[in-house]
Amino acid sequence: MTNKKGLAFIILLTGFILSLFLCLFYKLDVENSQIILSYIRIPVVLKAIISGSCLALAGMFLQTISKNPLADPYLTGLSSGAGLGIVISILFFNSQNYSLFGFFGALVASFIVIALSGFSKFSITKLILIGLSLNLFAGSIISFLILKNPEKSYPMTLILTGGFSSADYFDKILISLFIIAIFMCVLVFPKLNALRLDTRLIFKSQENANKYNVLFILIAAFLTSISVYSAGILGFIGIICPLLSKLIFGLDARVLFFANLLLGSTLVLFSSFLASNILYPVQIPLGVVIAIVGAPFFVFFLFKKGGILNN
Image 1: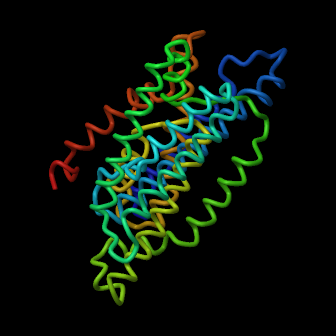
Image 2 (image 1 turned 90 degrees about the vertical axis):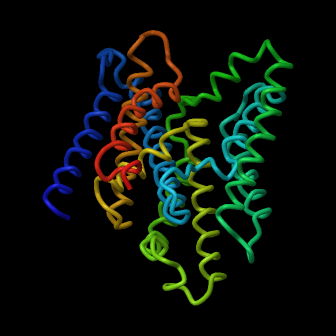
C-alpha cells in the first residue's frame, strides 16, 4: 500500500473511531450511563456497523461482477421485497418483528429475480431488468396498501425510510447472520480480482463464469437482507461506499474488502449520530440523513479527475 493509500486508510479508521465514540458517549447521562449504553447505544452501534458493512460489501460485489460503478444492492428487487414484507408485518401482525419480515421479504425477492434470470443463460442485464420490474410491481402494491390504510401510513412510511427498530441488548440472530456472511465473503472475495478482468481469459467457459456471478449475487442478496433486518431499507450506501473505496484505494479486492467495511460502518454510524442529535429530541429518519451526508461526497468524486464522468 502506497503512502497516500496508507494515509487515507488511517484517516478512514480515525473517522470510524470518532463516529463510534460520538454514538456511544455524546451527552451520556452519568447517572444512567450503564443502562443507556447497554440497552440503547451499544445495540444501535452494532446495528449501524452491521448494516453499513453489509451494504458496502454487497455493492462492491455487484459493481465488480457487473462492471458497472452505479450497480446497487437493491437492483435484484430486494428493496421492494423488503418493503412489502415490512408493510405486511405492520398491517397484519401489529408491527411485531417487522425487521424479520423485511429480511425474509428481501431474500424471497432476490431468489425470484435470480431464478427468473436463469442459471445456464444468466446475464447481468437480464437480472437488472427483472429486478427493476419486480421493484416497480411490488412498489405499486406497497403504495396501494399505504393509501388503503391511512391510519398506519405514517409508521409505515417512517419505517420504510430506515432506522433501528429496537433496543435489543444482544440480537443473537442478527450477529450470527453477520458472522456467517463475513465468513462467506472471506472465502470468496479473492475471486473478485479475477472477475474484474475479461472472464473469458480466466474461466474455461462462460457457464463457469456465470456460476461465480450467481454465487456473488446470492451473497450480495444475503448481505443486503441482513442490512434490512438490522436497519430497514437504507439507500445510497451500496453505491457510494464501493465507488469511493475504489477511487481512493484502487482495484485490489483484498484492500477494498476492509475499506468497504470501514466506509459503510462509518457512514451509517455518523448518520445515526446526526439523526439522533441534530434536531434533538426529534429523530430524523436515518435514510434521509445518509442521503444528505453522502450526496456531496458522491458528486465531488463524480467530477474529480479520474471519476466516473471523466473515464
